[in-house]
Image (cartoon, rainbow, N blue to C red; front, side, top):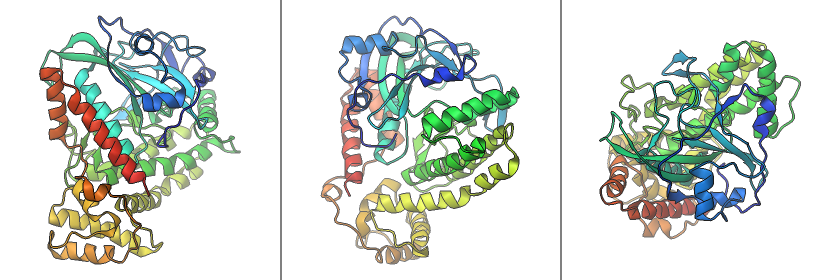
Length: 459
């Protein structure tokens, strides 16, 4: 998903139908009392040929969920299981969202339009199937910032306020409601495989693996398709973990039902960006044991991949799955170094000094208490702020960084302040909306983040 958006015609392609009626349940969206358009992402709508919709048509499709032409005739609440904080839960599935449409983009990739807050489904349990407007605003900010930072992420496609009052335990209530639509490269999760394994349905597992290989990875199934999928998924998800770390991002809830099979981050809840390089920093107030703390995210992703391997044992012997899984640590380290050097804008030297620079950077950030956003901004292109930071660990880092050749950097880094997305600013943006219905801070921040992303890519 993390490619430059390019215009394309509308091409419906509801491939999910090939998986039969057990992949999800047909549902209907809630009949909302209002549909007030708050955000439409025309930059990404253009990639699937939907940017020319009028606002009225947009509200019809993404607020009332009138089917798109030649697409799914009715939304599907997808079925899956998952480990939630390492406890297996067979009672979950799409509880407040559904798959609404599938389309091809300019590169021919199959993309999904899925929802959050669209009403109750057979998997809602005791939930109301709704999303707070604050949650939708937070997801806009998360996805915009992650996209700028080069993280493979879903794109917030649409936010429509729905005119209901919601009651929540973790924020002032009643609060405003919304329905969100996201664009991403599949809603097939590790938990999707877990459900099929739980039901011991080998035929359906073969069909799912075939679907993922052909439609999401764009390859023909080999002699051992399950092992082939494992070999493809491990580097993608290792890269996702590395991307989170270099972005300073804490997803908050890395359960197996929240891990996309293509390594694309999505379904944001209590996320935070870490102010400093603090491995123990957590995003979710309910993560009391720090299972998904900043520094434990690579471990969490590895653990989730192990659950994928266990599920695929239904149709595959263990050795090739284990072999693929054992490659994760090295793949993660390689991705971490590559992404770290990219954000610093220095050219790899192709030897052990790359890894040494990353390790020294981490120690320097911790020792000198340098905010992550400031660190990368101030040192980008090998620039060392003179006399700003002290300490032995910082001196080691500065010496290593000085040995790297750096490209000529755009003026952005001299003329702009570091771009960050810390919780205080997120809360200020929301407060302006909640108290004064002032959306200007949100739109200004989106503009700043997109300019930041453009500067990061301008190499």
